[in-house]
Amino acid sequence: MTTEAITQVQTAPAQHRKRRNWGDGPVHVVLLVIGLIIALPVVIAFFMSFTPLREILSQGAAPEILPNTWTMENYDKAWTASPFPRYMLNSIIQTGVITIAQVVFSVLAGFAFAMFEFRGKNALFALVIGSLIIPFELTFIPNFVLISDLGWANTYAGLTVPFLASAFGVFMMRQFFLTIPRDLYDAAKIDGASDWYYLWRIMVPLSKGAISAFTIFAFLSAWNQFLWPLVITNEESMRTAQIGIRFFLVNQERATDWGAIMAGTVIVMVPTLIIFLFAQKQLVKGIAASGLKG
Image: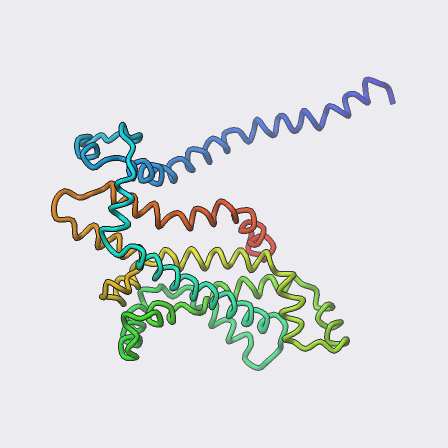
């Protein structure tokens, strides 16, 4: 092969990559624009939380994004004008209980559907999947009546019990467990390992990616709940942070203090932003590994 031919072969992949990168340019631009549009309300809320109320009211219909005068007064108002620390504690307890319960139950049920054979297995799994298409609004009133009759209104049990299990989590964990070779289970049984030992000492360590991904889903879903906590709690001491912000807005006697409201919103957003920034790679890997990608 001549030197010229070798050079052409070596440069061909680089030229192909260059053409491919240029071809991806419009896609990247579109994704960037979409990302900026989605992030714009968060950015506005962040900067408004540092803007004095008099400056917000003076801006009229065309508010400026960056404040002329920066202040931490809004955060002090949001934290002290109402029992906001109690609201945050309620949200943390509610989210923690729901997240832990959903992860544990999903791992157990997913393992059973993936590894065991029992009568009615397919029908039961179809029932679990079918529950995914039932909107929450359809079960809202029956859940409310049941929780009220049990005397769990204004309690942590009322906030958490209806959400302790997740059909999506069962499906996700089952899909991942099916990707693990069955021979590994058979070898463990030959060595005398129990099903419980095999699950927690072998399957769970191998499933860290999928479990981490679902944990993030469960956390975000529980943390962002609004309608159920709004209905099931009517005592100030049991309100979650999201409901606290809503009542803080309603209780404004004069001009709405948007700066303090945005400060409270930013405080509530911080946990979700931290989880997303530090766990986004794990989230993508977990979804891909669980077989949910297209």
